[in-house]
View 1 (cartoon, rainbow, N blue to C red):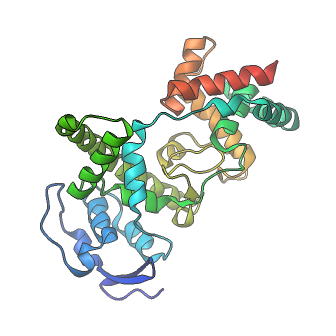
View 2 (view 1 turned 180 degrees about the horizontal axis):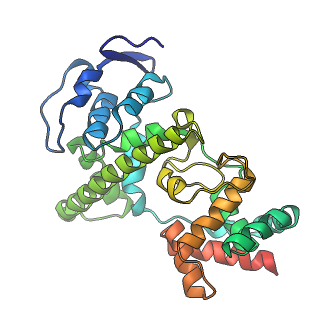
Length: 304
């Protein structure tokens, strides 16, 4: 796509939008509620301003806007802010199919898993179980455009999204309407945290892009912006991704790198010999007790 002198053409939902790149250098604030018209009113334009204002590299944002894959989707605002209102069910992760699959994985990749264990001290059964819970050993890695997830989440604290997400939380948790103010306050605080989180993840995506170890412009993953067999967030990739086959690249869709990256992550998170240390490390990976229980139970069953 051609780039005009002071603008970028963005293709989103079959609509071509002209965005003034020079406007991205302006300062936006969370309290800026002035009405916008034309290109500036488009969600991607607003998200771009928030990103640059929060320190995300402007050139990287421009690269994303040039790509026709980049889009805004309200579902990312909805799911990333309101997902706490529903409790996930992990019980299917230790059924007979899961146990058999993890045992097969342990046997097939024994050498690789033992190498990772020797370097990072994390047992093969834990690595194999975690990769199953995350992506079924790479079968389900997600089809969502990762940069679009984070650009969308940057708008989470806009008033209209606060109101709609407040209603969704109240409905999901069957909360009395008299408590709407407290729910709105809770949703607003969570939305503010998610905006900060999304900006940090976009900064991490830029870091990965600069390192040239993965192409983040076309990266696909989950609705939460996690990707690869490991379902790492971009910030986790930057801090913990490891080269498992010494090829100079770290591709989390490649098994050797995924295995070593999980082991490295858990080691850095405090994996140790006691159950308390082990649970804490897995909890750092996903801050859900049910998730920790699923990984530990599956690893135990697969080892029997």
